[in-house]
Length: 211
Image (cartoon, rainbow, N blue to C red):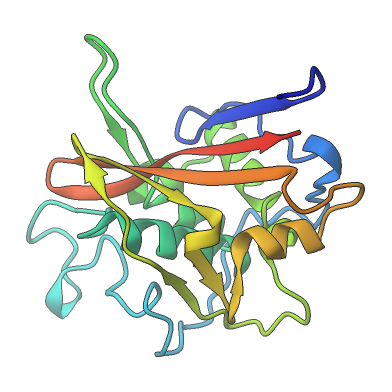
């Protein structure tokens, strides 16, 4: 039976909604990271070895339309988790989107939006940064190896449970639990939703279900 204290948070990522990661003792109190690290990704992490979003072969970003998403749901989630842990919210933003809603078209992360100084965009980047401490395994390596197990997609959507995401050999659900206070195994259910938009996959929601 679900207790009355059970709470569910569904977070629309691209909308700039306020993101407070304090549910059930999960705290994200690392320093806000409004400017991404200039360090280059090292090869090895499956989610971070893809070409930089917004860049086309040869470095010409204007030769063809920018596609910031990833070819699969798993790659989108893996890239997002990697960039969150590395403290690079602008790059995490590039693989995020808000699906179409009625007459409102889909909004996808792109360099112009993600680098904007608009108040809602800056707030969104700050909120993404709040996940960093919760997602970082101990001891941190600075170069996380993130792997995402294959999940079934239906109707252009896929839900990736945190236990399907591995960070430096630890499942993400266990990492989050180890960084929380007052939670026991079985009390936390975290998943990320990925949506296919115009042939690319983006992270579109994250669920924190705490009970």
